[in-house]
Structures are given as C-alpha cells and as structure tokens.
Image (tube, rainbow, N blue to C red):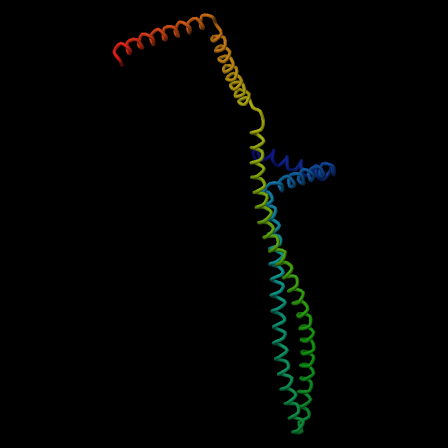
Length: 245
C-alpha cells in the first residue's frame, strides 16, 4: 500500500470513528448536508436534479405496483381457468358415478363418489383463491393508479417548476444588470466631470464675448469700420449718380 492510499484509508477510518463516537459531529455533518441540499434546491439545475431523483423513486414504486398488478391478474386468471376445468371435471365425475350406480357397480361408484369429494374440495379451495386474488388485483389496481398519478404529477411539476425557476433566474439577472446601470461608477463620475467642464467652457466663452463687446477698443474698431463702410457707400453712390447707374 502506497502512502497516498494509506492516508486516504486513515482519513476514512478517522471520519467514521468521529461519526460513531461523537453525536455532535454527526449532527454537524448532517446539518452541513441539509444546508448543501437546501442551497442546491435554490438553483434550477439543483431543483431539476432533486426532481429527477424523486421521479426515479416514483418510477420504481410504479414499476413494483405494475408488477404486482400483473402477478395478481395472472394468478386470478389461472385460478379462474382452473375453476372452469374443475367444474367440468365435477360434472363428468357425477355423470360417471350416476351411471355406475344405475349399472349396479356400487364399489366403482364409491370410487367416483370419493373422487367427486376431492374435486369439490379443490373447487372450494380454488374459489377462495379466486376471492383472494380478486381482492389483491383490486388493491393492486388502486395502488398502480395512485403511483401512476404521482409519477405523472411529478413529471409535470418538474417541468413547470424548473422552467419557472430558469425564467425567474434570468429575470433576476436582468434586474441586477439594471441596478448596476443605476449605480455611480468611476466612469460615470468622469462623464459628469466632462459635462461640468463643457458647461464651464460655455459659460467662459459667453463671458469672454460680453467682455469683448464692452471693451473701448472693440467699440472704436467697430466705429471705424462703420465709418469706412459709410465712406465707401457714399463714394459708390456718387459714382452711380455721375454715370446714371
């Protein structure tokens, strides 16, 4: 035995010993198991696996009920056929016994009379078996029907619940992503800074324009430009008058 195998074996032995010697440890382990199963059941994949296990259990019960029904029905049919054969045999024995008595062969008739008693006994026993198998078949049919309904219900419920969990999980992801969009991130802060700076620049340009408009040099320059334009317009007007244009 190599070292790794030895260590695994010792670990298993220690774990089993702890389970046996310490009930608290056993309860703790069972608690962890229950928590794991409970957590597993909250996911669509876990729920599907648990439903699959339960469906397998229901399928096994259904198969057993189905087998019991077949056995009961088979035995009932055998006994009913046997009763038909015995009834026919009884009539035959009684007919032969009566013929022997009519022929005066009493000793042989006695043998047939004893045979008739055995056939009657077999008929009585067969009737009791038929009664028992009839009840067994009825019970088996009831159990078979109940198991079938449970199995179908689990299969239908599995599809509905698991699919609903899948859809709700997807919706949760969508809502979570929408919540993420609402959260302020570093990029959102940068965008806010850009917008703020853009507003500041707009305000700065507007202010600079006002200052420029109010400067004396700007007013003088515009007055000179207006005067030049007026002078040019007067000169052009004189030329048009001179040449009648």
